[in-house]
Length: 530
Image 1 (cartoon, one colour):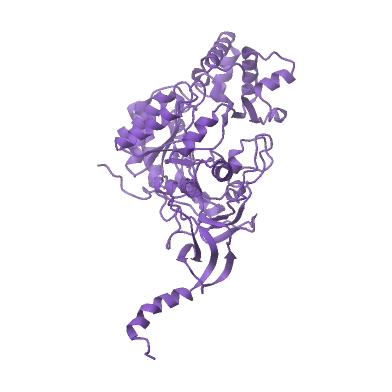
Image 2 (cartoon, rainbow, N blue to C red; image 1 turned 135 degrees about the horizontal axis):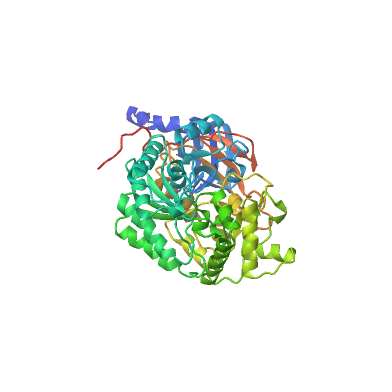
């Protein structure tokens, strides 16, 4: 018998080492969905430290922790590009609602709301240590407040220069881009040139523009046009947040998506994100006229105390309801009213009926104004069409996002999106409705957001990538949170790893806090002025 040649021994030696490699964690026998959208394949994943060391048939691999993933999907950890975790971090650093929904990375600072001192904020997060990785945007509203307060004014050149300076500093300190919330004060008072100027400041550092648009109902097309034009003028990527449309424009999703396609044909990098529900959620104040809120809360209360201005506000709010073809405020449900917790879970119409008051639009508006006087409330607005939601979800460039903070279990009656957005897509829209292939849904949650937000080393299962991994049962994954009983974690995620550390073990969050702070492309960089 001939002995193996030296050449053959040399060639096989690396394979032998690979077969006998020692890992910290070894996931075996799973169906691997790598995040690209390609079909799943059977395989094993070896993890060393915080990164993936090998993928394939690691039959002889050894590890400190071996997990049998037979019958389970192994996917990249999900990336939630639209969150609002500011203020929740200390209360629940384990971020259970995100982790149980497969999320290993969140991007906060959306809708124009962020910490103004990004350096300090990221240092705080780094010291605290969350269970999820965290990135942030710099928010327009907070930049504007720092220079102009809540005034309904156009900034002078000197004031605009101060604002752009704040944006640039935030980008150098690690922000990933610039966000707007143009339905909130004081962003509602800004004109498009102001937004473009600030977006250009972020673009110098390769940031993107994420926009909660100026309108998502009767003026939806003008709002989309503005968001795209900001990207065009600033020469930067655009992410349109929670893409949706309310009355009277139900059924307009095809035209909305065509506008994105047209922008991309023009060479503009425009994408969108979405939560998979027919209700939105924000503050009660969005129902108020813009002028009523100018100057802040004290000014608002003074105007409401003036009978003439009070009636003007009522008339304008009633006209808005007529324009949107809505007969009552039964679609508007209180999620959390700190001053009157008994209102939580009730619609404005229900509140009036319970209190023995008429349920006409003017009377319901008076109830809204009374709640505003008490300090306001977080709301859930049932105002979207399932057909539009499904069509936007099926669009290849739509990401899945929760638009949520870190939930405090049991507090209020919040929107279920904070608990179950990803599981809902995987369970309802993939498994039950067949709207998406499983691999395409995972891509929307992983590589698509990682690519858009320049999250280096994340969003794919590849050797050398960070070991953010979700292992779940595709036949069982389910969102358990409902509008009536929102405080319920998603089911079906058996194992979650964040930067190589097991965070969910056998369906239970074990308290691991191995998330890291992520820094944007402009971190400590010289601006690109080309």
